[in-house]
Image (cartoon, rainbow, N blue to C red; front, side):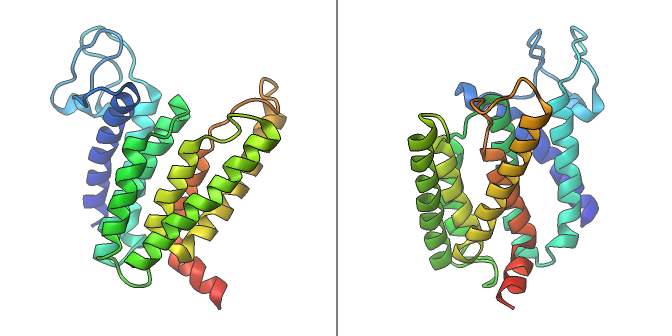
Length: 245
């Protein structure tokens, strides 16, 4: 199962790279191609792990492509050991793939796209009907989506008042809604708390280390939300049980 999911993760990584290039430009997804000359990679060459440069013009493969494919493969390889229930494993793997796509697009374009968050929310509500009760159910999913939206909308509104437009993007609000549907009401609060802690600590470190960054510099926040959601999809049940005990 671990080897199978590693292979699936590798293919999912290729798909994430394709969508991360196409969706921000509102283009139709197509086979991976060289950004320098437009050459479409054929056969096994669609995998960044198998090519260091374009076979047509010699341009080097982007590091992002390599890291997304390798990272997704490694993470997916570990999932069967971390999520033993087969149904939960499949459903959560789909959610995690969507969240990785959101991370890549947000880091590169400072965008969280409606075309990703709205379908992800609807898919998560449907998924709540088939996962185990300790994971989610449709009532918890709907309530979690509502809570995620409202809580982060308050953050968004306060940010506008204190720091002006752009302090937080409204895409973060919709991502929080999708997270609530994926995690359910009982786990969304843990995910939002973890995201706030991650965002605060890492932003402070970047502020201290990088002299080009100041208090007015825009730093994408969706990555922290998505990472927190992935953590809670894998370990959320244990965190909730530990907290309630």
